[in-house]
Structure formats: structure tokens, C-alpha cells
Length: 425
Image 1 (tube, rainbow, N blue to C red):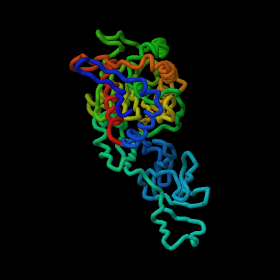
Image 2 (image 1 turned 90 degrees about the vertical axis):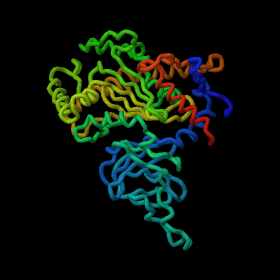
Image 3 (image 1 turned 135 degrees about the horizontal axis):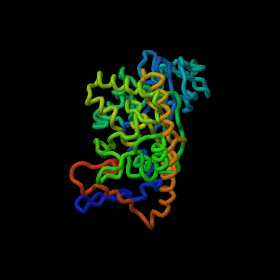
Image 4 (image 1 turned 90 degrees about the horizontal axis):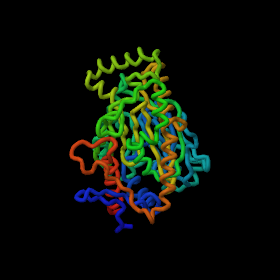
């Protein structure tokens, strides 16, 4: 595998292809886990999930069980959810508030700060046994940017803000929607599995080229609800102008003029006339706080952001955080949440949730279409030996601006994927 090129990148010949073995080969997934997921900064959760000392949520990242929590001083921590004695998980609840964590196997217990504070039969251990050496372990690096908590298992990881590079601008646009600068995950979590390679969901998450065909039912629904769908500008596939951008370090985004409404703060008939005053109030607050130009940027454009390798923040009809982890070459587990301003009104929250579920929800108009499309791709990949290459050259010969329906942003992901995969272990 070391000598095999999964990404063919030849700018001189205007050629960019991805070998489909990268989407089916178990050996590729094994290497991804070591050379990408064990090296990059990985999204671990949002600060709003754990508000008070002792609050915790448990989940799995990079194949490892973790506890995202606040310690006794209210500091956000990430612990590996594994007992230092014999390896059982020490917290078996999904979320809650705890004074500490106790392993049900042999009863070792840990306080909120991860310190080992209880060992049944401690007198039987030798004098050399030091509890201070056996607290809960943590990833080598844990950091947060504007409420988004990340962990890295690489001891030499670069600083988080350096790693995020241009993605910080787009996370800022999300958080700037809140009058208080605080966003929160709205109660409820969506979890589902897709029978497809995880990188297909990366591509899909910021691929606007598929919207007009794959999501025709949603577009028809919008039209019937009174939403004006503009005729695509000359040279465009989409109803409104949008661009694709590389943001550095494998992160990329599509950044589009809005045509489909936003809870912050662009009214459409789908919201109902009674929602107009609230949307106008939100818009006025944005302009007063941020100024007209920044307010327009926040309210009148949509963003689909991919933070390499597996975090997606879609800031469109609503805001969703989506992360996904591969469990096999042809299977991933997806978790998604709705995100909104902490201080928004009940009316604005209702609009947000309705928009979120209508488009992004697993029973909405978009997500089932996308799942079906990706699983259809995975079925087709069974013929990868006979049809080995996927072509990714839209926009490659265009100087200057790349459209959201071009593939610069997809190429950015794959270029960095290839770089990580080819680096020495």
C-alpha cells in the first residue's frame, strides 16, 4: 500500500482522480485510524453539554470511549472512560451529573477530577502502590474554540487554533448569531448508521452539485410553500451564487447566498406571517451589535463547513453539528445535533427546530435522500476493480473563484487525506 497512489493529482494535465479502493479496502481504514484519527484534532463535544461541575456525557471518538465533563472547579475535561485496574468502562450512563465515577467490576472509584479515590481492599496492595499514578487517563491534548471542544491523541499535535486555520472564520460566523456569544446544543441527539464509507459523507456534506437532482422533493416543497426559488444565474447550477473555498489543513467550505430562509434572520413564507416580527427583531439586533455588513454576512449567507477529518457544521436552514466515525470500510455511525443561540426566544427556537427537522433531520427532506445516495454509491463501488477511478475535476481549469458546485473544496480534503496517509508512521 505504501507505493500505491489512491489520489492522482496532476494540475498540469488538469486531472484529479480518487481511486475507489480508498473507499472499500480494510487496509485503508486501518491506516486511516492510525495516521488520521490518531493524529488530527477530533471534535469531542460542545461546552453547553456540560454546564455545571459534575455534568458529563459519554461517547466514542477515534474508537475510544470518553467522558466529556466538568471537574470540581468547573473546567471542561476529557477522560478516557476506562478503569486503570482491569480496563472496564467507569461510567456506563449516557449523561448526567456525578460526584465521581465507579467501576462496577472491582469497585475502583474516581472523583470529578479523575483522581483515584477508592480502592477496595487497598491494604493488600504493596507499599509501592501509589494512587496518584492511577487516575483516569486523558488524551494528550484537549482544547476548545468558541465552545467547540476538541481532543488530539498525538503527543506532538500543533495548537488547536493553528490547526483550525481558516475554519475559525466560519465557526465565528456561527457563534456571532448569539447576542450573548453563547451557543447551545438543543436538547435531543440524532444517531444513525450509514452503510457507506465515511469519506463519502465528507464529500456529500459540502457538495452542492447534487442538490438540484437529489433534493428535488425538498425544492418542490419549498415552492409549494410560497418560497421563491430563483432561476440559476448564468453559468451556475444552483439558484443563487455560491463559492467553494479551501481553508487550509484539509478544511473547506461552501459559502452561498441564501435563498431558503434562516432563523437568523431571513424570513420566508414557510415560517408563517406571525413569525415576521420575531425575524425582524433578530435582524435589528444583529445589525445593532455587528453592524450592517457583518449582520448581512451572518444572516444572508449559508455555510457548509468541513473541519478535517470528520466534523461538519452546516449553517443553512438551521445550524447542525454532525460528526461521524467509521466502524468498517462500508459503514459509519453518525451523530448530529441542532445548535442555536442560548438566549433566543421561544418563537425563534420553534422556527429553528422546525427548519432543522424539516431539512437536516433523519426523517426530513434532505438527510434520507443523502443516506440513500451514499449507500447507492457504496453498492456501485463493488465494481471498483473494473471502474477504479472517481473523477473530481469540476472547476479545475478555472482561474479565480470556484463555485460551490465545483470541486476545489472536495479536492482540498482529498489532497490532505493523501498527505496524511503517505506520511511516515
